Length: 395
Image (cartoon, rainbow, N blue to C red; front, side, top):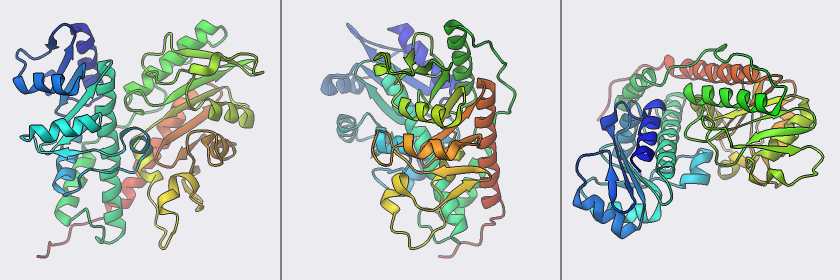
C-alpha cells in the first residue's frame, strides 16, 4: 500500500499538479488506513467509514491551478461547470465546499468522485485504486484551467461584458497566463524502429511517455496507435500513455478477431483516419490551449449553444488546422465521422472541447505536429489577450 501511494505521489509531481511532496496527502485503506502523512485525523477516518472508500487524496495544486481554483470559487458558481469534453463525460460538474464544513464535504464526495475546497485544495476519492483519485484531481485541474482561460478570453474580446471577470481579475489572469506550464519544442522524440510487434510497442511507449512528460495530455486521457497494413496496434481503453507496456491491443484490419474489445474507445476514429489518409501513426492528446480555442466562438445569435460540441455548423480553424465537432460513440455525430475527412491533407484536427488528433508516417512526426498545433494555439491566444489593458475599475 505504501508503494502504491508513493507511485501516485510521484505522478502528481511529475505531472506538475503538485509543487512538492508536502502538497499532497494520500490515504489508502487495507487492514488499516495508511498514509504518507505521520498522523491520520479523526475526520479522515470518518470519511473512510461513512463513504466506504478505499483511497483518498487531498491536494494543494501547484501554480497556476490553485490560484485558478480560488478565483473560480470566489465567483459564486457552485458547482463549477466547465464545458470541455472531459467534464461532460467524466466529472459532470465540480462541487465547491467550505473547508470547515465536514458534512458538506461528505455529501459532495458521496455524489461525486471529487470536489474543490474554497481555499483552492482538491479532495478526490477512489474505490479500487489511488489512480481513480489521481485521475479525478488531474481532470479537475485541466477542466478548470480551460474554463478560466476561456472565460478570460471571452471577457477580453467582448469588451468587458463577460460576467465572470472584472478588470482586477483580468490582471491576475494575465499574470497566471505567464505561469502556465512551458511549451515543449519539436524534435524531442527520437525515431525508433517499428518493424516487429515488440519494436512497435517500444516506439508507442516512448511517444506516450514523451506526450505525458511534456504535459500535452492530462492524467491517462489520450490514445495512440500504429498501422502496419494488416493490423493496428492501439492503446487500451483506460490505459495511461506513460504506462503502455502490456496495455496495447492488436486488431486485424480484416475484422477476423475480437481482440479489440478492450481497445481505446476511439478505435473507430483511428480506423477511419487510417482509411482516409493512409497514415501509419496516430496520436491523440489534450493540449490545454488547443482545447480553450476550440470552445472559443465569436458568433452571435447562434442557436446551437447546447449542441456546439456535436453539431457546430460554423467552419473554424487555427491557422491551417480545422476545428470540428463530434462525440464519442457510433452515432450521426461520432468522431469517426467528423475527424477523418477533416484531417486529410492536414497535420491534425482539433475537436471541440476534446483535444487534438494528429496523423503521420511516424511517431516523431505526429508528436511534433501535436507540439506545433499547441504552440500555435498559445500564440493565437496571446495575440487575443496581449493587447488588453485594464481600465480603472468603476464602482
